[in-house]
Image (cartoon, rainbow, N blue to C red; front, top):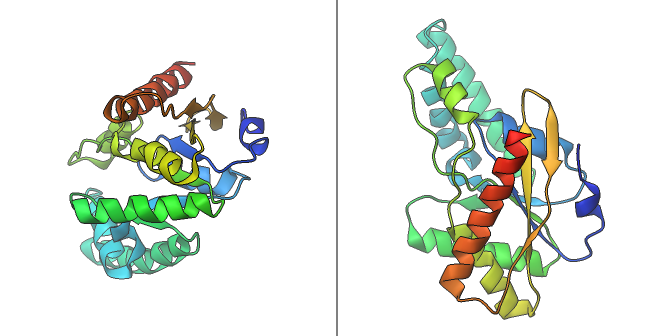
Length: 213
């Protein structure tokens, strides 16, 4: 753990922006961060049935497993993973539906106003490969970030009058390190659209620098 003191000295709620990889980085972040938080989690992972289907998609790329074994693992995993994720009081994130995106932002702002920190993984989708090893290798590479999450800065300032701080977090699976960078702070004096892109771009730049070290 590198730089966690940056989080521990904060007296206002903040957003942690972390690289995703496949499943390694979210698990590492959730298990190792000592500050409290509510994570953004893809809504399909929070329901047993849809979580099972997501696990099946991964398992079907492993030819060494029989179909019977894949189904058994997916069924057990879907039940276990969805239950564990729900224990973290997650904020569901739906993809491709503007109404659900707005709902995610609204729930997030209420959480921040209640003093909750947020943990999010806004990397662009990873490439899907037929071979699981190749897909895992591609997932290790840092991808550019969506910009929508940065709307939290404007919305939080509008309701609280305070500038939200976004901390970049880079997890290196090979080195077994979790590094927290310096925060990017929302600037209410900038144009709202430009500020959204500035926050996302600057966080990506700082994550890239941590990835290169």
